[in-house]
Image (cartoon, rainbow, N blue to C red; front, top):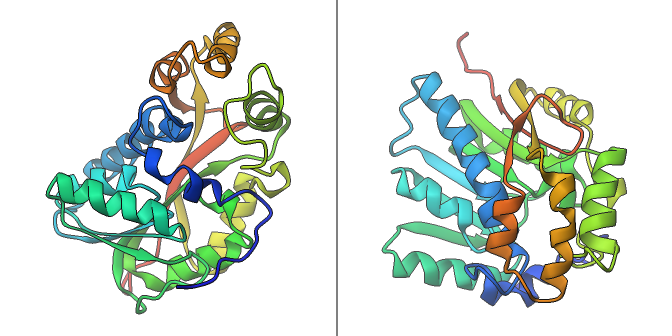
Length: 268
């Protein structure tokens, strides 16, 4: 087994809470499942349909797959799906859940900075809520370009480095005791990525950004902030909390953003 490197954020949280990936109540991992995953997958499918892209049977890699939230959605749409993650306990949970649903998914231990796959191997690569957790997102982007086939898709989602993201993600959700719903060091604001920084990293390896959208909570976000202490007091579960803070696509990218880029085809 590979020895994990110490990181600038508490990525070992995904080992400690690995048994709770599919729980509605026990862990903030439910935020990924109910608040973020629906909007991410809707974005992916909508763009593939708009492009009339025949995605059935295509080879897909999900980097930082965790317990398999997005990976399972991909597999259900008939894609040849592989997920990688550095958390062995999370992968164990992912395999068990996929087996229970009779889903054919391949899971490997691995990291985005060093993908153990051949060049030009995947038609699509997903890297969602991952780039802000790695030591060097530029290396991850370069590896993604390498394993993508010409014309392949790179779908990304990450957190912008702004005052808004500091207040929402760091202050309210991580650090302020009355509203804290996540571990205090699971994110580092300094390692959030501005859209122009990610675009430069993609362009430097030949990936062409095609679309980008902001991700924001509903207009009731401020009104619902007083609900956060109920999580701390164990008076509301994470699934109900996510219903209050349901996210949507937006022109505003000051909090999170998602999009996709393409590797140029051989013959344009």
